[in-house]
Length: 145
Image (cartoon, rainbow, N blue to C red; front, top):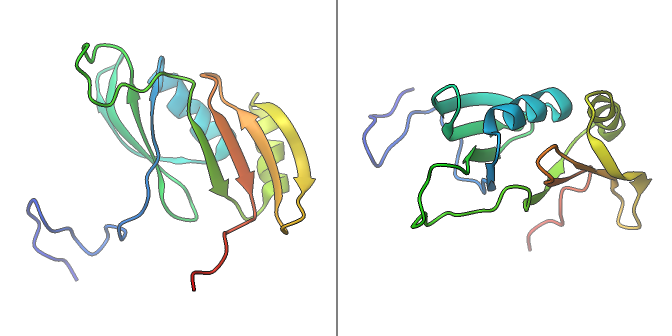
């Protein structure tokens, strides 16, 4: 089933509204490659040119994802002036041990090794080449009342 597409509607393949963390990067193209190779994000779209990313969407296999773009060239009055390397995010993952191995092989700096928490999560924290922190764990949050 496909819905009409205009400024206020989407087609049936568009995921429902979610929270999409957003970050800026000094080298967005390199960061996209790293996030795909090391952590398993999936690049959906990237707008810009060879040196600059105006907007990119990376989806996470379990749902949701992130949006990012280049920090340079946006001007002094940029309303979304996020400093590269200051982002942090928690991402739910099913097989954290395999993801930890993948991230380590790809050169991610693991800043907190795999561990089990008292609230039932298995998790680790890694830093990407831009300095952003990524926490991956099995904790999916508490059910809503």
